[in-house]
Length: 292
Image (cartoon, rainbow, N blue to C red; front, side, top):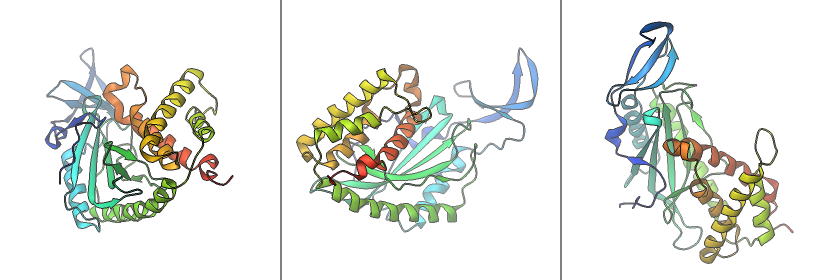
């Protein structure tokens, strides 16, 4: 089986591309050494990816992803026809590996295929922990569907670490169970009616700034109207249902405008938006749908 990824919003690269040369080098400023620090340097593009204190242990992508994939094949997940693709962000300072498992598939409505999807994030710059998490993968749109009960499995704090295969197997087994549980919720949403007022209320939740709990008016209008636009597209296929609204929320993660200065780092923006959508799906306004 082949999944057509031509329409996916990700900036895709081949697996071999993530295994670029990288090394630790002394940090200098104006040809003078800076004591106590080292640079993670990528020779092929002559770029410094990160600066760390001495003692930082450089673990390369080629020491992470093949071991993770080997553990996937040893896990209870059926890896037959597994699809994998990768993203590089900020010149390779961050890497995101995507793994899709078509043998684990649910159809909330006939023809709407949702596959198990596991994502592994690694960084050389320490901006994110080495971690994996699970979601669904909507075949029709080539985009993810967040799980309301998803867990971020951290394998390191702020730098890459060697991955313990037994830990990976334990984590992805948990992910598989969570995916199976979420499928029941998708089926419920597929038959739950919603009103236009419900959609507007959920659109407003997109606009809350998590730290300040205040509203940025410009961002509010853009995010809310984009969600409403996506919902009206989805409802033509899925009806006025919570499933159409949930799909619109997940599409918002990928289709809402990206800042021009963030186009080289879309994956980080997407991770933040996914976290926001998970929070919304746990909000009372979602939980109360269909109760009135």
